[in-house]
Image (cartoon, rainbow, N blue to C red; front, side):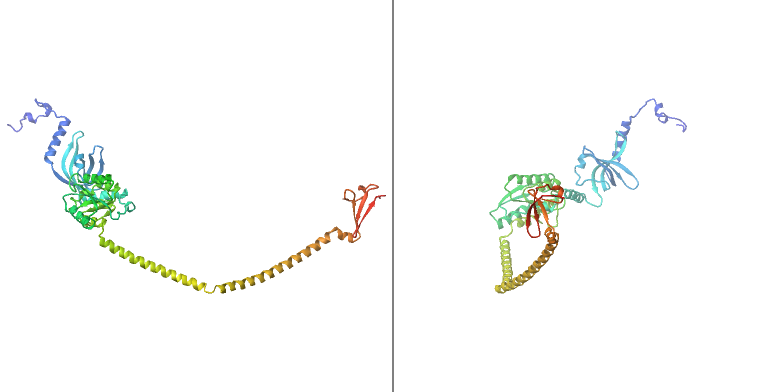
Length: 412
């Protein structure tokens, strides 16, 4: 064929005799299929932003680095398997595939699994749940209750196949064989274990006869102990009316259940020892308390003896105090009499002065100088001028010495 010849395949599509058109949906499906075959399983690293959990349970977010970004989606089924909650700004490793959302032709990364960078998913989930429940007050010390002393009925929520149950039963039988023990077997690891543990705690409360409850299991890895880090178990312990002792793993293991429970025991064996102390230990405590009580009584008696001795010294000669008070009374009596006489003299002087001033104003003093006072009878009205008199009126005239009755015969 000549180099400059033109074949049918070189012609534009619309010029071909056998025309074939793709719809946009078909084109997006082809692209999607090609991408998913080429990038069907890979890990990518990035930072989460614009995270949004839809009501459907699907999670939509953006994965980005310092130069680029890509839309991502994690569907409900895969998201429900995550141990932690993705958050904006979290650096993660995502496993999945590249695909196309054909409705809009958007390129997106479909995430099947996710791990936080620099920290395991379980460790991150532990810290997230711990922070959440602490903010709600589930760990508050003031809500924790005292364990009953020598409980009669003990509830055990644990596996019936593990060594933890046998260790606790051995301690209880050795120390107090008359105690009643109620065992509620549960799965302590794996799928559904957390739900079984929560239901068992509720069952123990419904019995109404349990005095204290031990919830726990023997040691294991973080994954093995994870059922006791689930929120459903934490809330079941929080709502329990029966005091709960958490006994999960070994002494170095800490779970969310430990923080919510009324008491934490480092091991299941230690939990049994905690709720049922040895009789020898109790006897030793009683002896110590008895000795302390005797010491306190002796100390109080010594204090009382010292107080009585002090009082005795103070009242050794009651007559002396009486004589001192009598002497003081005599001094006060003399002083009181002196003050009284002085006040009486002052009153007499003031009375004499007042009498003198009153005498100078008295009409009798005027009479002594030769004047008289005339009253018209029978009205006893003082006569000041003759205008008020008539011939024949009767008068009484008062002199400095004596009185006289007169009749008016003439007036001027």
